[in-house]
Image 1 (tube, one colour):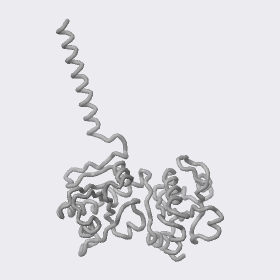
Image 2: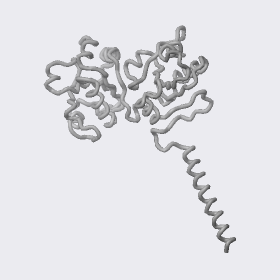
Image 3: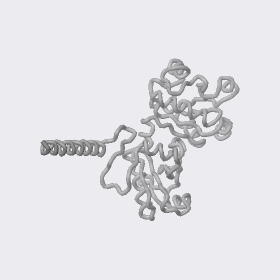
Length: 272
């Protein structure tokens, strides 16, 4: 009897160990969800972080996030909270890389500071070249968000546009939709010439196909025939613009950027 109980005990322990091993193996082989995914490329000198990790870093401000693209791209749309770097002198456009010396100036020479780099997604080389140069310069804590800005957008992340970016889009992208999210009386008192009004008061964040957004889909203010269309959102202040931008991303408009300033600042910067 004792022998049988002992045998059963061994089997029970073995079963639990096998279960733990299977769970660990499953966790190590695949992410729990798409927000925890990385490319898991072999042969890279710096580790990757997931979208979920980047969101946490930005919320907690636990690392310096650098956008490794040229300034014009950054100005048109960048992940909110990211800092742009000037180009390394003497490199051509095809092998663009940011200036490590500028990283040193921003971080005041702290080579232990946590750093995250991103650029234009899985196939972008900028977010691979810069980390290697940082390692060579002695930086110890460098990671990459290699999924980059395309996946950030695809997973519902909005981007931020600078005033120079707004001016560039106005001049070069005639398909872009500009949304003024102030109240109708403010809009009628004056806006930028191409803007359409989608008042914040009529938007219900967290709910789909309701309120002002539903009306805007039906009356043509929102580009329902092409969700790739660039959408620029601005309002009386950054908070108002960001709230509407997030609501639009929830509606599968994945090329949304908001202006992180007041309407008066936007108007003054673009001169229109």
